[in-house]
Each structure stands twice: as structure tokens, then as C-alpha cells.
Length: 108
Image 1 (spheres, helix red, strand yellow):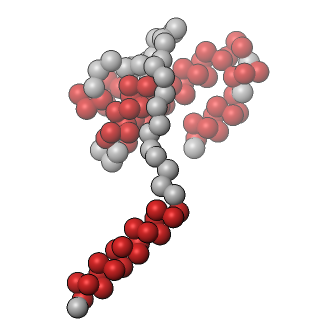
Image 2 (cartoon, rainbow, N blue to C red; image 1 turned 180 degrees about the vertical axis):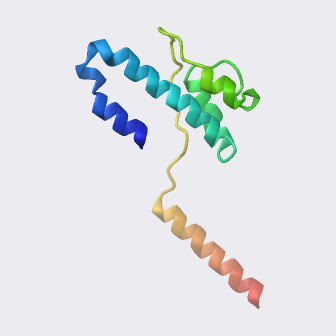
Image 3 (cartoon, helix red, strand yellow; image 1 turned 120 degrees about the horizontal axis):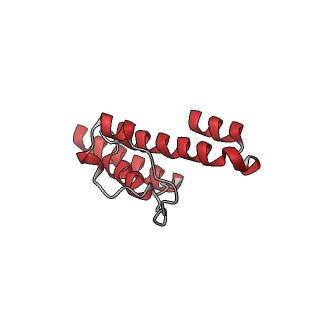
């Protein structure tokens, strides 16, 4: 959320001179976000890491290396991919009903 606030406050689309710094800070923050989220959501974190154009595996990185890493100018990025698929309310409802039914069967 703070990254969004920073980006919106800096308005890089209105500040061509400061745009490179703003975008570089945001990309660096995403690198760190990938690292800190890795223990919780490793697959998604690894995808973010790759989408930032990193060639190495995130699981092989350490704090110091990531904190010192900056994304080089003119880096090209791969096409972004969806990190999570949306679970529709109907699907959640069906799953909850199936769980309730299974629990009731266990009680009897």
C-alpha cells in the first residue's frame, strides 16, 4: 500500500525528470516484497521475481543481495502473468456446503 501511495504522490507520468528515480524505487520495493513474501506464498513470489526480469531463483537469494540489488536501466521485462486466479463466490459457497456435509457425516 505504501508503494502505491509513493507512486501516486510522485506522479511519474507528470514528472519526466523524476520518473526514472520513482520507477526504480518502486521496482526495488517489488524486489524486496517478493523476498519477504517468499516464505508465505513462494510460487507467487517467484513469479513476481521473474516478472521483474531477474534470472536467478528467488529461493537462492538472501536479504543482503536483494537489498543491494537495483534493476538496471533499460531492462526489458517479460510479459506479466496472473499471480492468483479469482475464486468466485459461487465456488466458495459450494465448497463450504461440501465441507458442512462432510462434517455432518463424520459426526454420525
